[in-house]
Length: 382
Image (cartoon, rainbow, N blue to C red; front, side, top):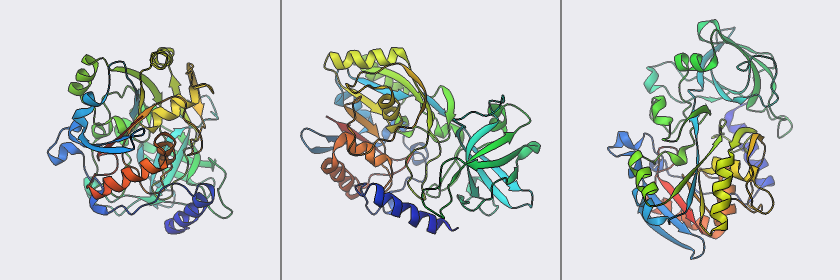
């Protein structure tokens, strides 16, 4: 099955499920192909579009202006998940080259080996060339159950079963449960043989350090929790000095779907008791709770009750936030710029409302904001 067919079918499914996800034409010139540091800037020097829900207005700022936009007592909820070098070179037993993207550990477990079963995405490998200039891979959508892949150092991965039920009859799933057989613990194996997942809009491979935020502590995300990338030590110090409170959560993000924007699969998360207490206290005192990234929203919403009170929680979340579901746990959001029809836009719409979100995206395109994980930022305030 071709990637184009998959993309068309998934878009058709998406339109039936949620016709309101906003669409727009994203010019290729607005795709950030490299990190700000490679463009002569600091991480915090990206642009920041500020959208205020009550006033329905938009303002152009820099990310370094964030301390001026927040008030003493406001809480920034940040994701402490660190990014894995989750892409592995592979080949079938017949010698066909492939890429294997690790997404999350198998939510159902399976065996005594904690590294043994993973949800994975299999992709066709690009043509061989210098690694740093390698083109991006494409989805491999017709792999058979039981396919064995050879990895470095004699390791193998066997596709056991689709990770989710196919969305449409005759349409294969991207994600598989795979059994990994490795010669060393997974973190050490990935450190030696893995590289960060990247997609076609990036001009080349970048080192794993480019995909870590200042808050990264616990390895587990296939893709970076990129909303927090512009925070620098100096900016955090300014925010803390102003009385802004940082509250950590952890959500290990799985692989996204740039070819067809599927809702997020199950992801492992933790909301510590200290964070639950900080968020609840801030709400009682009338301060704002601002999530840094949609991953932080998903973790908090999973741990929130119907009244918006946050409870300590850990486990796997299958929560999908759509435009009609009220968001109980946050008042605002720091985020990046998402692709047309991306499932993340449903979370943004639930927080900002449709008119303000559409206006923000129109203004960002007209003003030349940059997209994706190395691009500019978007702050949604009440």
